[in-house]
Image (cartoon, rainbow, N blue to C red):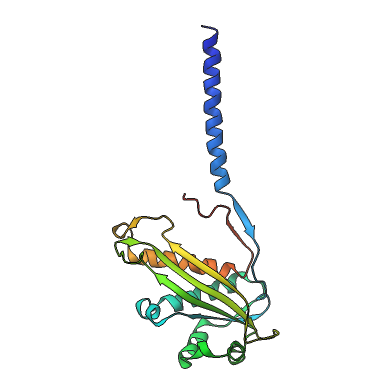
Length: 214
């Protein structure tokens, strides 16, 4: 029995070490980052205007959402897309204000009037702070179709490509309204959506497992 005791202790110690190493390995794996290539690299060395549109209900309930998205996506493109020339968002928003029916205009005409090579349109189709019918929980969502038109393309009036981009905040489910203030939730949602929308256009680093709760 005395001879077996050291062997048993050594075996238990080995199991503990293996368990610790396994946990460490799992944590390292879920923290890994990966490089993701741009879905569309056609903004490189081009001039571009970013236009954001949403339904009247969203514009009324969240009047700062569209301009914040336009300005911050424009800024991210300016900082990360090689050689891009982003039209001042204030110029773009003034164009939209002066032409209330701009969304019905041919994209080629928009590109001509703004004098840009590319037109990026972010068409928001969902924007909310809470689950439907439950204002006591936070479940903020912003979802949009993000498309790009090429002034020098085969058909400048058509989107050459379009992607569905969405974001939610907070990332974990079941967050009660009294746990976070509204400003934090709004800022978190906008920041996440802007990042995801801009990522379409340049190479970047993402979490390998973005859905794992940390």
